[in-house]
Image (cartoon, rainbow, N blue to C red; front, side):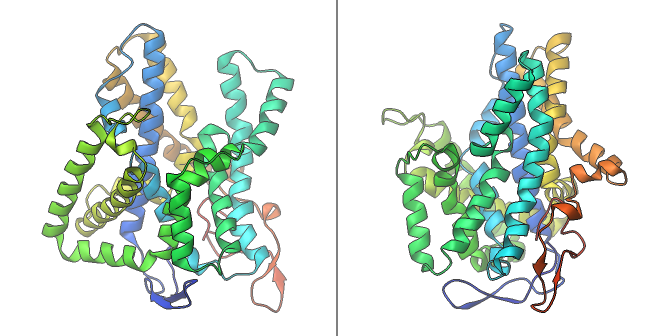
Amino acid sequence: MSQFNTKVCFNSGQHRQLPSSGEHIAWFDYAKGICILMVVMMHSTLGVGEAFGERGLANEGFMHWVVAYAKPFRMPDFFVLSGLFLSLAIGRGWLHYLDKKLVHFAYFYLIWVAIQMPLRLLSDGGLTASNFAAQFLDALVNPYAPLWFIYVLPLMFIATKLLVRVPGMVLLGGAALLQVLPVNTGWSAVDHYLAHYYVFFAGGYLLAPHVFALAKWASENTAIAFWAFFAWAVANGIAVFTPATMFGYASIAALPVVSLLLGGAGAAAIVCAASLLARFKIAEFIGYCGRNSIVLYISFMIPMAVTRMLIVKSGLVTDTGVASLIVWLAAAISPLIVYEVLRGTPLKYLYRRPSWAKLAYNRDNSATTSKHAPGHGGVSAA
């Protein structure tokens, strides 16, 4: 995602400024890295808490506080980032668009469901051919929980292209209503995920110039940006850890409208933090994780589960927070090592889409070809 056109036509019909062609967006890598590391942290920490609780140990540790703190902005920011460059693709023909925005993610979803599901069933003692077939078929309709993001994201891409002629403010307002109001269609992909997060994806798509302007401002006004980030961090913590008086809501942060506002504010804060990290080239590992965010997302579950099992069975670590930290680090680092080892072998197709899994489309309006620019076959689709 390092090359972009200078100007993009949004569905409002106006041309907006985006990064110039060939410019590398370092803060974007950092922002994605922060998000994916928080996602891995959440699964690692909650899994350890559950496993320790079953053994009669404390089911919460200090890492649970970090996970709770990040909840209002962890996924909203991921979806904002996912929508940032949609304007560069939404005008493409349907075959081109579906290849990049549907088939691309479907390939990795199906491959990794087929890998992860048997391992999970085996660990639960329920691995049989019929059970696997039933659950695999269900995963085609309802998102397989560990991989729900790459199931739901193509739905958002398709919905946005279908609604491309809807005025931006109407689209964003409708998406906000979906987030605030209860939705019950009977399809978990919509009810549990799309309805709640589409507003942030649409916000990234429609407000991309403002997001880039914010990142630029933060890079040029580092002191003010730092204190603004600090103020947000305090406010977010107060909202997360203050109980709500309304029945059914654990904290102020979970309240309708408040969760929407905190999600947007949190996304803006992560953009500022990422811009500052990129500005001073701090913690470059985070940027590396961002560049390989889908690699981490599709494969961290396996080393996470193995590390957690070893810790629980060995009994060497009994502090829930420390165990969660160890599992998180193992789950975040191991997939990247495996990816680097396998990328030069036939197993690279676990992370890179082969040519047979691509749609043939008309790239230049004169000839149909299945050839793709470098990088388009991997896990980061342009």
